[in-house]
Length: 198
Length: 372
View: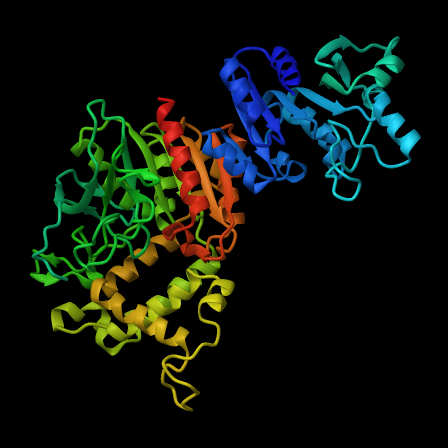
C-alpha cells in the first residue's frame, strides 16, 4: 500500500534515526531511504526477508522484535515504525511499551477489524473475514491480536499515550480521526495510522 | 615446508610490540593479492584467514595444489568479485606459510625457534597486517572480512583502527573464546605435545616431526567444524571399501577413513608448533575483557558498517555468540546488519558452497560499494 508509505514518510522528519520493526523485505525501508535524508535500520523475524534486506544493502538484523528490541538503548531512535505488524505479536502491549522506550515517537499502522466489509463478512457469512488487508484463513493467519481503530484509540487513551496524529485510510484517501468521528472512521477505514509518543 | 616456492612477502621494519611484552623487528609478512587496486584506491578488501588457512584465498594453492580455502567466495564474478575488488590476504604471524613463525630460524642461535618463539595474540596478528595498508598506500580499506579466527581479526581490526575500513564482515566467530573452544584447542595441543617426536617443540632442529600428534589434533578439530546431521547424512554408518565389519581397529567406517585422511594431508602442509601458537592466540582472544566487560566500548569510535553472519548448524561459534556482537554494536547505535544462514554444514559452512550465504554476501558487498 503505497499511500501508507507516503503518510509514514510525511510523519518522519529529516536527519533522524529511524527503526522499522518487522521490516519485511525492506520495501518501506528502501522507499524511505530513497525519499528521505534519514538513517534507517530494520529488524525482521523471517530469514528469507532478512536476507533480502541485507542483499539490498539495508541495515537489517534478523531477530524477534518481542525479544530483541531490548538490546536498543532508551530513545536511541527518533522514530520507530510498526507497519501492520502489531496484531501478529504475542504481547502487543509490551511491544508498544518497547517501541516508546526505544523511539522518541512511534508510527503504528493497524489494519482495521472494524471496517464495514469485515463486519459484514462476519455478519452475513458467519466465517472469519478475508479481505485485501487480511488475506489469510483463520488457521494460517499470523495475526493473533486483531483490533479496530477504536480499540487502538482507546488503548492509547487508557495508557496516557499521546496521539500526535491519527489518520484513517480508505481507497487511498486519508482523513483525520478524532474523538467526534471515531465511530464513523472505525466503520469506514481499512487502515488506521497513528503517530504516538509517551 | 618447501621454501623454494614463490611466496610474496614484505619485511616489516617497524618494530612491533607484542602483547607478551617482547618486540619483534624486521620480520617477514607473507601475502597474496587478487584483482587490482583502482586509481582511487577505494576497492581494497583485506581478508583474514582462519586457524589453518593461509594467504592463498583463491585459485590453486601452490603448496597443496588444491583450490584456495575461500575459492567458493573469492574470484572473478564471485561473491567477492576480483574483477571489481582488490583482495589482500596475509599469512598470520606465527603461521607457517612465509610469515614470521616458530618454524623460522633464529639468526642469533642459528636454530629453528620452535617454542622459543614469542606467544602471539590476535591483536599482534592484526597489528602486523596493518602494515599492508602502508605498503599498498591505502588510506582506507573498502572492507575487512573473515570467518572463524578471521572474524575475530575483523573485530580486533575495527577496534584497533576504527576508521580504516568502510565495511566489516565478521562471519561465524565470537568476541570471546568460550570454555568449549579453549577445551577443543587444548585437546589438539596436548595431542601434539604427547607425540614423542614433538621434543618439547625442538623437533625441527632434530629432524623429526610430530606427525601423529598433529594429525590427531586435526582429526579432533575437524569434527568440531561439521554438524551432527551433516556427518550423519554424508557418512552415516557406511563402511569403507568392505562388506562387513572386520573385528579389528582398522578404519571400518567411512567416517574413520575420512578423518584419518584429513589428518594425514594436514601434516604435509602445516607446522605443529604453528598449530600450538595459533590456537593459543584464539584462546587468549577476549575483546570483551579488554574493555572491562563492555564489548560496546571496543567499537565506540567506529563509523564502520557491519554485517554479522552466523550459521544455524555451527555449534563451535553458535548464533548466540555472533549475536552478542550484534547486541554490543546496537547498544552504541553502530550500523550493524545480521543474518543467520540455514545450513547443515556446521562451522565449515562459510568455506563451502552455501548459495544463500554467498548470494547475500555478494549483494551486500556490491550494494555497499556502490553507495560510495
